[in-house]
Length: 287
Image (cartoon, rainbow, N blue to C red):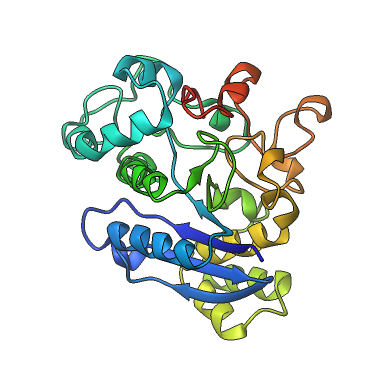
């Protein structure tokens, strides 16, 4: 039986444990929705859980790499190179906020190279650049402080898609916004609650109420439940040719035509990059 874990991540320097929520779905049922662990603790919790239940897929909602040009500039030839570097450089990059990073006071959006990975260019909406580390909706801080933990998960035996060959346990990047319908205002409690109860009426009502209580809990629960609805895809990792997971039914979220993107909201790298992703040490280009 494949178990599903989704983690709503946080890059906060202090108090991250309050914002990091984990959701666990077993056999289609939401059985756990908790917060209270910081980044190091949730990573260790994931490792220990997978040791007991190896057939586990974990969704993490932060960027797993940078645009290709920045990886090349850093001398990184694989995902592991990026993550190992972030173990020692993430805080420095965040503290200095030098180009291409931006978002702090008196900084401007960088112009050194592509701000987005290909996976972000392929999706509708308003994705944020991993280089933005401040301001509304910034994802850079959480991503830089998350990448170092990918190195720990890889060392513990996890396959990090798409940088490793598919295997169990499996980690994939997710984008919770694509797992909710257009028009849903996630900041409104009543809308979160209505969506949960209408979409998942057979789930544990106590946990659904908890999920409606905050945007972070909501994202974790929605992500895990939606992943569980698509286990036919996730249980066959060799079919995954895409760089960030979201369900095939979310076709409206993709700009690709049916001939090139019939898998809807899956966002893939350009064809040459996708083939590299299947090797052990691929270039992490525009993932």
